[in-house]
Length: 111
Length: 116
Image (cartoon, rainbow over all chains, first blue to last red):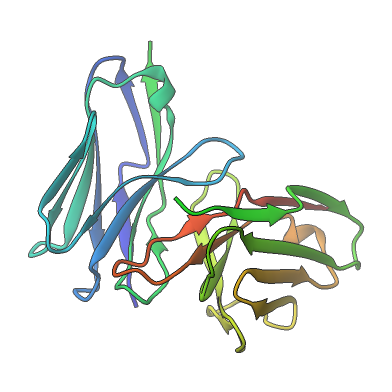
């Protein structure tokens, strides 16, 4: 089955700097790669996703890149703000299979 | 996005009792629902996949007799933790999906279970 590795487990950045979180996946059949943000005690919220027919997607300060050959995808947050502090999870699935999540990255944005 | 409602949001129960958690898709019909368990500071671990009208598919290591899942309609799935013990204390969260081309999932707000 699918295995998703996520790095780093914790990340601290100064406000205004960029943050990058990387994930690798094992199943070449996976074609859907969402990123979720989870605040303490709350449900994960989808922040951006990318499908295998696209190499990059951007939404304001957030972007995701996908390299299918290398089986890795990354989340990029620019101009970070304190409210970006949360745990971020990457995930992968192949359409009709459950999402498999990475272990999460705790992002701290220091004002 | 679609709305998934989970109830209760928190529950405290005594050891040996059973607890039922409900997961509802409010504005769409969910052919498939998923149940996850999350320990503090850890990721979401898939427990089981629930398909409407059929038996749930459990992940390896998850006791199907302890975690009973019923998906009786396209908008409701329930997870019953039977004979709960303190080690069952955790954050349980469901997600629902109507199969788009990419498997998007929408999450309930989660249930924090504490067994005393």
